[in-house]
Image (cartoon, rainbow, N blue to C red):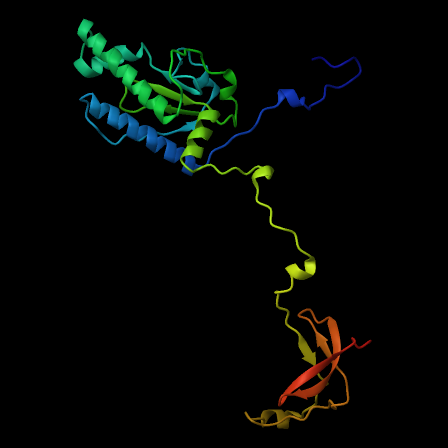
Length: 266
């Protein structure tokens, strides 16, 4: 859309032109990669290929990967497989070292098996779906994941954010953080909420003066006379030195205590 003459184009896009930003944690992508690797290893063993630990590495899908021609859907949903030259062609060479009528039939069955296994991991539906992935999956923060599949004849896998989210939720790796899902505790008054909080109070008495000789001669058990009379008020202050109460020294159950009074004005 062009700006009207004399007006600058706005840097802001409309709400309709925006898209949701999606990202996955390392824990989520590693767990999904492990599940795909196990499925591939079990498939190789089932078809007489050597079973080995396959390190699948999932990474954010780029536009270059998404726009490659030849993506085929694994089933209804957000999962696509790219097999250069056709899945059966590469598998026939892996299984028999050459192509032939019988080799082609076995390779077709082998390709169907691995696609079903991958579709099951991604919890996709079944059926002959062949649509290509949307170009938007290659945008930054689209949430789509891409992997080159080890142990296969150069196959690549593309997983949309919907399929990743569904798998993580089924695996217990996705927590609904929407405001509607957040638990809400019953509200209470500020006084009730802070009732159990402890607050240290200091009682300030009048000080005393000692000469240096008397100070050096003090020993444990000595009594220092303060200049604070029992009839004189004391101050109760908080940790920051602010006056909270006034008070007077009293005795309670054989112990020295403080009777609270209104704060003393200074």
